[in-house]
Amino acid sequence: MPDLNALIATHPFLQGIAPEEVALLVPGARPVRFAPGGLIAREGDAAQRFYLILRGEVSVECQTPGQVGAGQQTVGPGEALGWSWLFPPFKWHFTCRALNEVEALEWDTAWLRDLAEKHPRLGYELSRRLTQVLDNLLSNAIKFSPAGGEVTIKVTAHDTHVQVSVIDEGIGIAAEDLPHIWERFYQATPGVNRAFGGSGLGLAIVKQLVEAHGGAVSVTSSPGQGSTFSFTLPLKSVPMRIAD
Image (tube, rainbow, N blue to C red; front, side, top):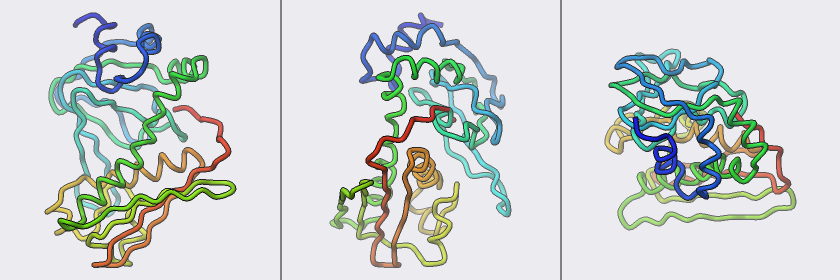
């Protein structure tokens, strides 16, 4: 396997972080391999490892009570696996298995948390994936909006918090589906979702990330009239509780 310094410095997940901060990650890195079908993490177990994938693909799946089979998405080269180490309850939320031979870099999450506390700038860069919240909401808004439709982002500052809303002119969501859309792998209107694709993970990730930062999520929608997805974050900083 090539030099660890080079592998870490060139990994897409870490691009944009200052080289001297990326270098701080090198002492804790360990190259690992998983055979096809190998178990990497089990849902509910403590999130004690964080991975940057170098080669191969990993299935990320969850067995949902009352459903046949497991919802699944795939993580591959250039991506990270194990973001739950950043947020309580510090447990894996999915079961992860190697679909083929996988090579990755592995870190002990206790070591990473300690490193993030000693070097807050690096800790910020690692936890900055909160931007995934807005990316997921925007991706959904665009995916389910008709050609020529508009997607609006509205930001409102209040005394104690800021609210961000993503408003689309898409197909909307039925009232009976609204209470469930934040659940992992839940997909409203199966026929529509088959046409548009998606694993049903995006909104569950949004909810977890926002709540881990002391915020809340909400949605209003009607079939044929579009949807408004919102999240709030406190203006007063919340102590970062670092852990998939």
